[in-house]
Every structure is written in C-alpha cells, then in structure tokens.
Image (tube, rainbow, N blue to C red; front, side):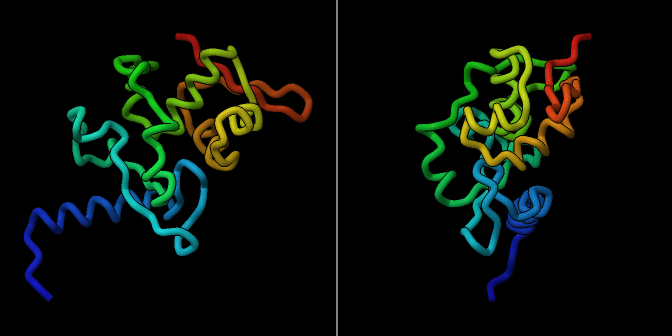
Length: 149
C-alpha cells in the first residue's frame, strides 16, 4: 500500500468520525451499513463555501446522497439562528424538522416523519436531543414546539 499523507489521514479520519457519530446510519432514510453503501455528505455544499468539518458533514446512503439535490433544500433557512445555533450547521434532519414545527407551531415525531418521509426513529433522535425545542405530553402523544427565549 502507498504512503498516506497527513492531509489524507485527516480526510479519512474525519469521515470515519462522522460515520461513527451517526452510528453508520443514513441520516435521511435511516438505513444502516452493511445493508447499504454509505457516503459522507456535505450539509452546506463545497460549491457554496461548505467546509470539511464535522459540523458540516453527515452520513448518507449512496441513494439518498445521489438524489437529495432534487428533494432537500435548506437555502431558505440560511442565516436563521435559534438559541445561537445556526440551523444550517445541524444535520439536514434538523432544518427539516424545525421548518415543519415553525410552519405548524408544534408537532409529533410521527407527524413530521409522515410529512417529510424521514425515518421516524431519526426524527425522534433529533427532537429528543435538540435544545431548541420544548416538549409537551398530551395523553400518549409528545408534541414539540420551539423554545421561546
């Protein structure tokens, strides 16, 4: 095998860290390795100034990564900040969930999953770990809304 340069070690190490952080699971559809080939995708594309940083990379299966340009866009959320955290720096699931909640006022993970086609487990993971949302229980349902202040 050839000699690996310092920059290529960083390049592949960073990508492995992203895959590991995302539990080797596509953050768009929820499929995991080894069932599907995985790639590391830029949240903000390089063509738009996106960098190779852990905050700007997300795990995607080959199929979702290849087809996402026609399905997903977060450019209209550029510059929007909630709680000091830039929405475009969260994985794409974050902006999509937040956009839905902003539009509808509040929502359950099931509502968001059905409307967006994102795996419910991944929606739930985002909702449960977001510091930007308030959780309200109504019977068996848990509704999420944007935290104010």
